[in-house]
Image (cartoon, rainbow, N blue to C red):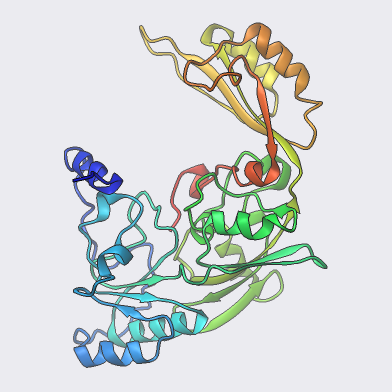
Length: 350
């Protein structure tokens, strides 16, 4: 019997971590403080399903397990009472209002990559926004309209034909909404800013069940909070409008140096992206800088030459990528490879 990725990681994780204790209400979810009521009955769920275009997934149905599972198998043991597949903003509104009436918390789910399992709940309703994944481009304003459930590969692929992209993350299955709500730091950030810096407007359903369009003029405080304040804290985003940037030629590079040269190489690197290890007793440590040069690589070539003289090949790098060499690629890959996630570049997309 073939062993799947999920089965393999589940077996490994079982010996390392235990599932997160399920809180009474997800801290990342929307909890509108409704008047407590009895749990929803079968008739209540049927009434909700009747008002949805996308559909309601309940435990015991064929699609329940595939729909509830997140990227990490660590959270496979969490079983939401219901999952709403949101075909559009109206489904989000319907589900939020139902949750308010019944006293259930709401947890939005996009890419499902949250490291802490914030994309699921064992006590409330998961709003699966992945069906809302359309991507459009307006050449007149140079802006993209991106569905709140789009993954990064949806975004990059949808904009590629127009020769533009947005600075975002490296993993194609990460959701654009969790990434943007957490900031979105990446290797193209020094050129184009964080993902959230490029947002010009958003459509969002708030905890009172209202559908709103927010920007710098309309509800600016909510607009501010959605851009880096954390996923699911202020509402469920159903659509983003973002500035785009030309997808020309870029160079992605990694420079590797011995730890003894760390101070000198940090001065050499200047404002480039990068990071350094810390000295460990008895363990050889190397300094590595990685980044993405946007446009022609003329400014990078001198450093590539210095890298070949002073740098050291990393055995883990591909042939030709060691000694500080760069490699050219299209900006669709480079901007699409702007590896940021929520909160200082660490992962919490929903």
